[in-house]
Amino acid sequence: ASNPLHCGACGSTCAGEVPCNAGSCALGCSAGLVACGGRCVDLRTDVQSCGRCGETCPLLAVCIDGACQPRVCR
Image 1 (cartoon, one colour):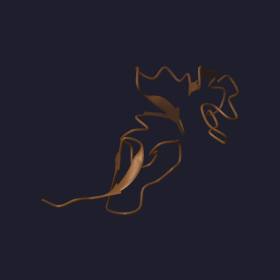
Image 2 (tube, helix red, strand yellow):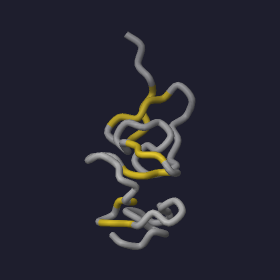
Image 3 (cartoon, helix red, strand yellow):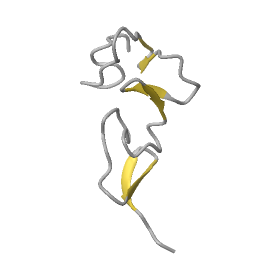
Image 4 (cartoon, one colour):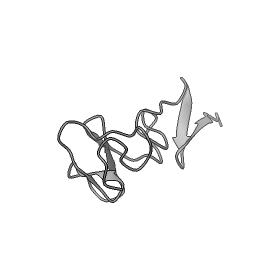
């Protein structure tokens, strides 16, 4: 919850001097976003940080509720 080397999850490191507060890197991100690699992301929808910082979804997949899912064409 407060360790910048394991912020919110094991190995989830806060960038630079950014502190960890309540399991989120305090970069000044809006509510619902966390700092990953120096940018604010939504871990529920970001394909480059899906579910946790640095967890990249495969090509043509989407991030839904923090899990990589195959893209469905309609």
